[in-house]
Length: 312
Image (cartoon, rainbow, N blue to C red):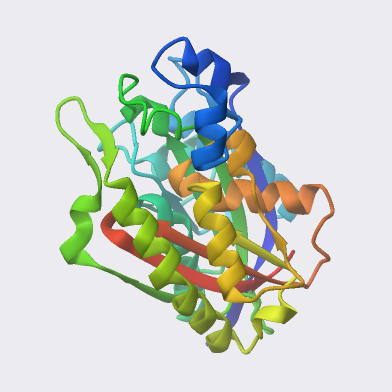
């Protein structure tokens, strides 16, 4: 058995920016109402013909280029998404074809907002077990495609985008043990249901669960990795809501860490939010290479998954 590490990152966001003032012209809301409740200023919106696979390919291509690996060296593609355009071919297969990959295993992972950290753990496990050597792991959502634009409690949240990581085998592990789980009995708190499918949630239930139950789980992630919270260089939580991110990070005790707040400009991009925020921090040079970073996803199904990685 061997370990794995993140070799390179990449991200993509659509060009169109939707502001709070524009939303206020569509539904009964205001810039002040949105900022005070969720902290979001803007979000990116995919064009009608821009697919989930298109965005995933853009982010994946950037991560692959940064890794220095050849297309025939990628033997596993995992795409975390809950807004796939088609059932088959799955998004991972479409990305592999678009990038000209040779013969990788291709799988989509649907754990909604914690999808990327679930997929990253799965890639790490596959590499440790010897089933893969180099994996492309992508979180991507066209979350606005399942948005009810008449519901002011949810339409102010959602955005579109993608983030990707290339994961490679490593003698020195750079991805720590995952801590994951769910609360199946409360799966109804976050839903994408109906025909057409629409996103809805029980906001107060999700807020209470996230701010009270998740901090001790996040501390357990650090314990499993052998890293104290105060040693973390960065904390990248699912970018759901600034009013969740801030108290969870504070209760974790990561007093020296940069806390990602990409939600303010990108909105809630579900499975894309963690790799999108992480890739931006690394691109701006805000995290030293090799520094410990906590990734922690949570949300739909009341699922969660987290690990400490070493920054590429």
